[in-house]
Image (cartoon, rainbow over all chains, first blue to last red):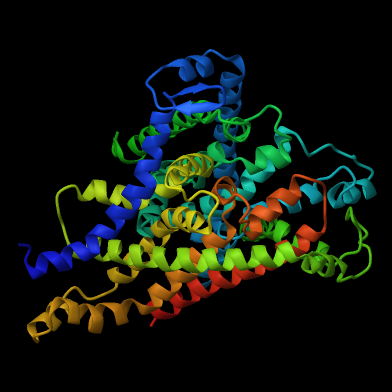
Length: 281
Length: 258
């Protein structure tokens, strides 16, 4: 018989295990299993066959989509890190504690605010006859085609990830011991040397974490490539949705989903290794 | 000094980029042009009037509120229990336990949508609001856990043992010491997870069937044509989630700075 302490302990421990086990782990496992199921006459039957894998892995359009998605997510991660860095640097070193707090406060707000509606707003802003082209027109420029292109999708990715990347970078930069930077300056290190040899290595974890989150979010995003990128070429998430919504081809969609999860795991582990490994290498 | 000014301007530019879509959506929601551009048309409430004259908009709002309230309650309970377990106990497989607690937000929502559709379908819950609540709880609980864990960090580790020494049972100490201490974090977690649920549309879209929430309805309007009604509905969505997120943050900041 369990003692009273045990009951207390498990009351707090079990909810997560039960809920996330039943509604997070099981669905994902089911999805993996489903990728081996048989589809005939628009009906799925549990099975263990490799038809769906063979079918998807030998199709050129799947690999094209993979390439586009991976490439775009990489560019988005690099771009977001570069765009964010000067802002994070300034927030960490050039403003007061209070200003920094408020800045973070206002960056958290959009992260939890309807991404879908923000993308719609960009759709209007970037349109051929939209406000941005109108302003550029006054200066005698344009009109530029910004929607339904890689550029449009990238604007969307930045909308999604930039606030988070700035927050993560700012935290790690602000946590650097200021004496370290001063010591480097006293030893005669110039601004560039201090930046590349002291500040960036010391903030490595946050910088890599920011880039990884940017990659993960962009890699899985469906809204920006669809509504701003014109879905041509399709990304993996667009492929999943098209395959799922067109009848009972869920097993094929599951194949794509497993490909995505494996990719994200590899990237995340590599990044964590890079962030925490070989500190003084 | 000049570099300081430049950096400040740079920060301002980043904030303009981040808030531009939110502000334009609000401005265009009261602007008469169907295809807004510069210069703006005249002021109008027409888009709000047409949008809110549709009964399905009200149904969607009602669905969203029910789902957000239920998902936020469940997420907050699970998140608190998990945070307390992490704070209080060490045990075997704790790393796996914490991974389970924090992993869901890193799985792309499209994949969550597909997996949920398959599983909830088997349980006979696809197309129901219950199904959406279940999925949103999975996705939002990690945020609740993070908020509660941060609050527990600030609690003196001797506080609970002190209560036990004074003769309180574990349950009594929980009720009289831990929960009051975490109260602002609990409210904050509720607000934030409600915002997460209120804005989530991919999984809801996969699972919902005919029971649409507000963002799912927006998604379906978007698949048609440019329609400024979206700005009107979108402004309402923005105001709701911004209120929730700001409230969540103020609750934490006010308490942790005292």
